[in-house]
Image 1 (cartoon, rainbow, N blue to C red):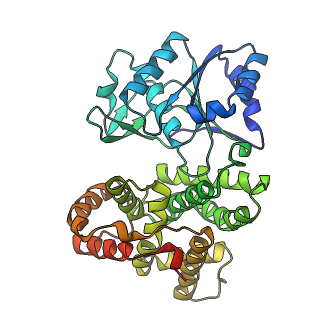
Image 2 (cartoon, rainbow, N blue to C red):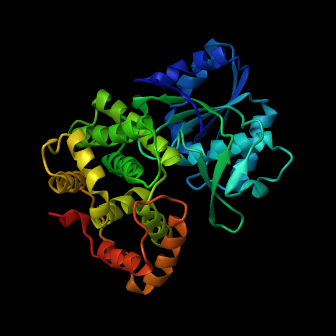
Image 3 (spheres, rainbow, N blue to C red):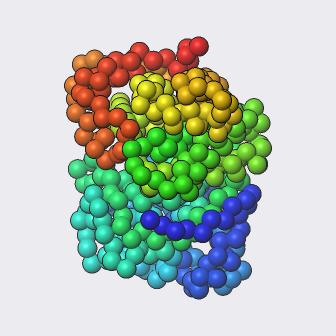
Length: 385
């Protein structure tokens, strides 16, 4: 797993030049997408690199769904400028692209298509990566996974063994102007990582458990506040930190059925990941209540929703009630009625297949997956209460 140094604060990307100078880099490739490039968020980084006499080339052709051609072009750009490091500035698509580009540079004699493996092993580690997330949600700035579209047009998920993320720079300035819908969908996505990580059926050390608890507490405290005060720099930074902790949960504790359902429903109906997560989160958490009573109760006490003297069942319900209130506060308008009963059987197969990659506290039978699909299809987030 990457052991990155974390640098954070408003305008923290100004420190990229010093970070690269200290690491001894003479040439870097800055990778971003066309939107961020058009907004000029990358210029601060270029200026900081110039101050340290570090050569910087820019590759800004990243698409929302990166494919093999983009990775090939990125690898060519990195090789041509003799990059010693890749700086990733953007959201999940930029992060995933840079991970695969960093691996492809080390494996430069192999076609990119041959690298889209479930586990891509890179001997001696990938090219070093410095990640600067522009959203507070996916945790992709630290996760070892990357999703790239193959030549058949389907998405391929790879775990990159040897991924060398050396620094993560959390710059809250990049999220200050995020639309409300982006703040809420990214926030709920990050929260799902923390919750599913905390209740996962894996052995976790206390540091990882604490990061997942902090992910959850920070989002409950800061997301509603940001919806009322979107320019609050401290809360923006707290959300960035929460997203990073969520990425740690993905790496160390894995996800669960919320993501298996959201991935399958999102792919089938072209629903954004944040909306799909929001739609699936409550029904699945409530279904898992009895199995997760103790963990839900711990979270309720940690977040201040219940007292240590409260009964486990009472405290667990307080956590689920707080989760419901948060989703209501976010004002999601999505309804699940687009999910057709005619698609239930195919969705069951997709969800069951995807869930193998995770570590849920319960293993659902196909009939239980179908029952949850029915509940989700009847869910209207705008009328929860």
